[in-house]
Image (tube, rainbow, N blue to C red; front, side, top):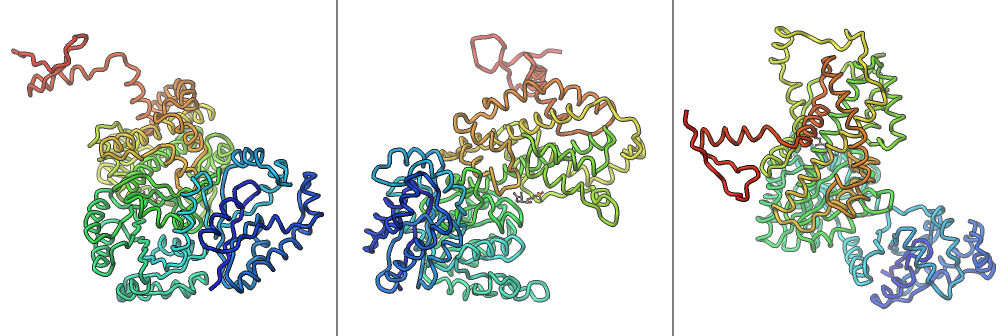
Length: 635
Ligand code: 6PG
């Protein structure tokens, strides 16, 4: 079949250069759509006037005719800006097969290129209008033009090979179905599989193809062998099953059915050690397992999640066009699918993402307590405050949804007032706490957030305390405490930074301990700027900051907020304690900062105690020697 390859993007992005090389590679004719403009269009552009739809239509029709002519013979490579979806629809009409490559670059890079471009009628000033007109084609294969030409061509080759393959998706729960729909919407051919459990999970995959029109062309299976067979020689499988036993069992069942070169992408919230164990077992057969942390919930999975991938780098490169295509894009246009490093580092980073998420969620809950108990505000007023804060540097997805939640009523009552306060946790927060302990990294923020969930479910102790020490009923509080809205806002900013700081410190410690040299906080945070649950303006600030340091505390914004807002933290914590408003994560932030402030900590006594009862040794302060000493304690 004759194929037309379209390379699209704004002027100056490199369509002609890349298109010519690509055409040569495939031995196809190259058509530069710019050569088909009418004299009047060229005149207009030379004068720096943007073309209208009316100007572009006859030109696009000409490009389309050229595409049809070539399509009926050998195929061709066409470089064309094709800025709008309707232009692209016109261009592909009646073509046997068309591939779209979208060349992506940031504005500054393109501007620089346009300035140095010679012999072209398009002035650099037209870039603004092109960018404003551009409707980014989600279905196209996005090419990062900051790569070298060789890398770009390799990526294009891999993308085309992948596009021709049938992608397998295993597990059609909420997330797996959303991921399948996302892939299908971007034009990937799918085989989808779900296990068969009588009375519980019956014909789930088939059902999905019936319920979602976009999945109607996907092949549906409830039998693993037939599913794998349908993939043909290129076996690329995205798995979205509950982490742990379900994932392990299925991978074991898949193993004999797959051949060397197969790539499995595990999108579950898996424990990184499990991922590494499976990677090793599969490697014996030449099968690659990529651990892939996926964040963003159902909506993210459907519209574009953040993805943190690890494992064999070459295997990642093979499936990168698929993953990058379905992932979210951040404000700079970068894909939020990131290669993190080897082994289980992707799932590790997702685990820390969740730990930060636990801290952020706990903090919003405490801010809610302070506003509702401390300032005696109702849920609707708090929702309004959250909305206002979301217009500032406090903006975050979690703050936004918390505002939405507080504005929601159920049967006439604020919905939160009707929801049980027993909070659950699945595993990632607990693993992060254990990991931090293993590596000796302070993790008070997410440990406290995790414990708060456990405490909420410890009903026996809750009842005991309420019986013997006393009950506090939020609604009984009639005298608001001496804290202002501004004070709460300042503390909120500071504690967020402290929470993020502990998460990033854990990632860096793990990268060092486990030998993951490619782990980069700049890359990770660039990938967390969209799609994921902890996306926020703070993340944008951190992503910019991490391009020059790996230490969050060296980032100017963080330094400023921590320094300026510290006294508010002390005041707020003291007043809230007095009023008996529980603020565990805020207190933890204060307690840990307070300890760091001490020139000398009371831990000298701990060292002495250790030596007293166990001869564990201590080091003298202000002594040249770094050796452990033992004192002969005689009593
Ligand atoms: C995400 C979430 C997602 C899920 C967590 C919740 O990034 O999309 O983190 O992975 O909501 O598993 O974890 P808990 O059930 O432990 O709160």
